[in-house]
Image 1 (tube, rainbow, N blue to C red):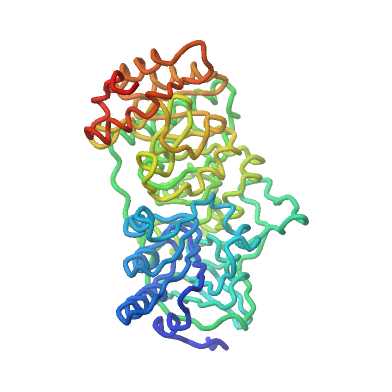
Image 2 (image 1 turned 180 degrees about the vertical axis):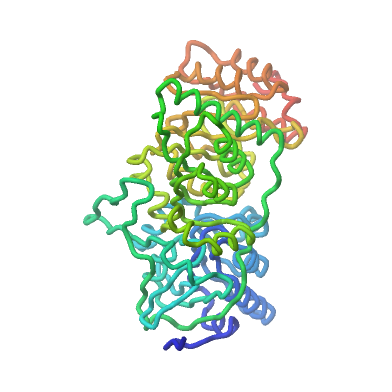
Length: 500
């Protein structure tokens, strides 16, 4: 097919991007992330640095990206600022050394913040496509992210036309962007499978600076196999939902599920899929992984609305080979819609996300190790948590071989307050915080979620809390676990007498 757009090499496309400019990249996780232009841009940055000239660009994405995007640019020290989420260890190190400005944001808010002009001008959009029309119609690949918004906002556009992604993905996407205030209306999604937009993105052809031809699969890293701890967390969640259905607190037909990404999320979804007490379910979420597509195949997941298919190469091949079936059961949306709190509350979504740590009040830290070292960012967890029918956070009760307790007196950083968190789960058990006051929450969390090595330490902490009081808080000892880890490397050594 002949197209009225220049065909560029990756190096030629990278040469168009100048120091100090801002780029918006399509995709969500490594799915549909740029794979050719950004490594070429990293090489350009290295050449400029070697010549003694500055070269950095601002990078906006949907969520994390692949090693050829965040990884390559971070290793070249070519990023000036980054938002809204990332998962690359080199880039994480640069954040924590103060070498890259990082704006951590709720994922659903990023596209509208960009439209509102909060980040300034967007110079370039780099978006992966499996097909493109002469009129500027772009068929996205395995994820949407903020691609549509960035295509609209950017002064110029570069398209990576990826032969590794099937053109038969046409029809898998539902591209819709709400109007901005004061003209915004309701998002007309009333069931998980509702289609409300277009199967393609349309961009002004005059903005397309060129097309870079690629043939590269998504750089989705394999997840670690389940552990006894993650399997038990999954079973605890499944048992909790089954009991709530039996008690009538969850409708007998069940409710749509949202799940984060990673090994614990896979374990939870797997347990729900296996449980005979959990009905077949729908998912309205931001990421679907291999485990969910397996449940779609066997009918345990009847429909999946998502922003990203973060799946292995083998699973993607399987999807493409049976694309007609999967188009009946899957839908890819922009993250402004997949993560929208309005839709989550209307549909009654049950949210399930992971925590770094949580405290006796029920507040959750999703982002910072020991309160100061950024991991990846808040991601989409906050988009769903406050709007959820039931909000669930889970994590193993300990880390570093037991030297760190994931349950602490007071979280060193709070991303989700006690007002939004309803259920906490570790491999030890489930703390149902609904209808409980602060001190009741603290006792339930200790009894049900804390590792045995830390139960008495936590009960002793409560003895130091002056009563009567509303919150389980003692200013002198609130961060004693964190201080002890900094001093001795093991929270189990905590001596409350040291922290007066």
